[in-house]
Length: 144
Image (cartoon, rainbow, N blue to C red; front, side, top):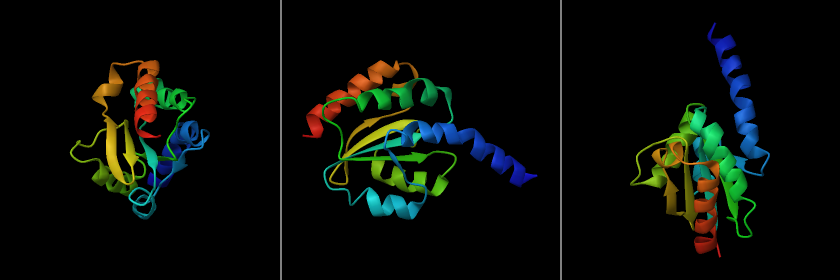
């Protein structure tokens, strides 16, 4: 029974994964992949904590997509999927202190250090365009 449920969940979330990976965002699905990439990324890195919730679908993923049309974008683009790739997400969140775990959320890192963070509560009541505008401003300020 759990095998069919796991398959169902995998099939259900794949389009949510594809929405980001189709933009050139690299999925980090294991703690090792996170460990090998986040602290060692020279320059800037965007990390999207993906989620199955409505605000991820309506605001977070579309806002991230719009922000990548900016003239200045991070050097590296990563995503982890909360609730799906649990070890990878937990490892990524270690780099986001002092912010508590939330998903969806969006981190901008520079030389392995957190420099900007958008928490779930900052996603929920805003439009995708608001999120894109905040990210674009952060890219312009921190990614040059």
